[in-house]
Amino acid sequence: MSTGDFVGQRLFGEYQITTKLGEGGMGSVYLARNETIQQEIAIKILHGRAAESAEIVERFKREARVISMLTHPNIVRVFIFGRTDQNLIYMAMEFVKGRSLREQLQQGLVDELTAIKIIKQCCSALAEAHDLGIIHRDLKPDNILLCEFRGEPSFVKVLDFGIAKITEADGEQQQQLTQAGIVYGTPEYLSPEQAQAQELDRRTDIYSLGVILYEMMTGRVPFAAQSAVQVLTMHVFNEPEPAEQVAPQRVSPTMGAILRKAMAKKPEDRFKNAMDLFRALEAREREILNERHLDPNASYVPGSELTGMFQAVPTGEQMALNPAQIPAQPQFQAPQPTMTTDRPALERQSGGDTQRKLIIGLIGVLILVLIFLIVVAVMMNQS
Figure 1 (cartoon, rainbow, N blue to C red):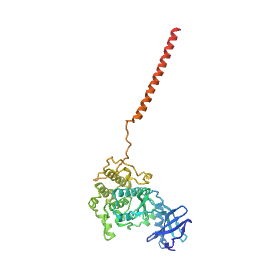
Figure 2: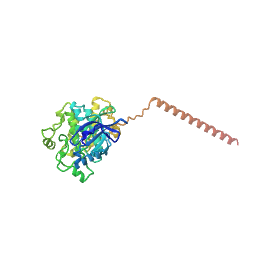
Figure 3: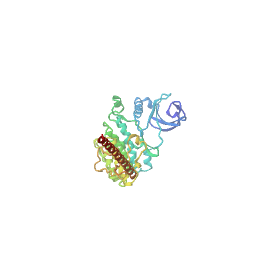
Figure 4: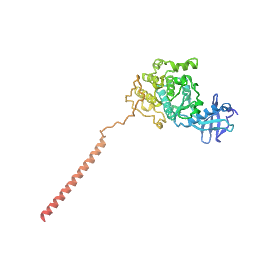
């Protein structure tokens, strides 16, 4: 049975497949709904012919395994993995209503503060993945979903860990699925080392995020050509046109420096990890808040408090990032509450009354003691 026959059928007893959301070379994605609890989930089902390939099946299983390891609010969750009654392999995951960053960019460029907010969420999500030894390897606007969450219209969900690499596990199986000399990913967003099919680490995702941010700020990718090979060659050998020159009205010196560091040809010249890029973006974000005299909460993203990624910063605080040299590990401290020794008048008055009462009481005790001593002395003289 083909996956095209699944609309109208039920899975897990209570979930009815209502709509086909999309179809690719290896499978289709459906929307399923549980009327009892009013829940919708996405069902990704491999095509029958794809399920006959041991490598594709193993890659599909690995995608489910990878995503199920991740619990970050900015990453799509996987609920169930298994086979249908027709022996087709499926993966049930969180259904997110929204639009891709690609669709957003097709409608027009976003404000710099929004761009930073989006990439910061991606950094936060990748930080968890990287800590678990997972490299995405195919970051691009199509795989960044923007949805509305608690009033935030640009809440990020990172999608498609289908070609993710688990760096600390899998062993021989990983080598079989990622064969030497084969380049996976989308040419416009690949790092130089990925373009050359070299060994990858978390910094390849940093490069891809840099390319995405470059496109968000300038309206174009740093490298474009008629063939994928030409694009890959440009990633390896060519320097991109500085973003400040492409879009001088939109790209500040600080943002230009962030982009250059994120897209450095050598991995060792980039930000060391996703949180280093996060903090550099946070510094530029603070500049914007100061420049525009915005409330610190303008940079808030719902759910960020759960990951410890949000710290409100007073707009009066001067936080400047040297665009000539962004530190590898910039240190930004949350503002400390202002301390003062000048207490409110009411508190001072209350404290003064208490002190006077204590003094009067002490004097009274001393007088009683003195009277007692005089009485004792008189009695002794009489005896």
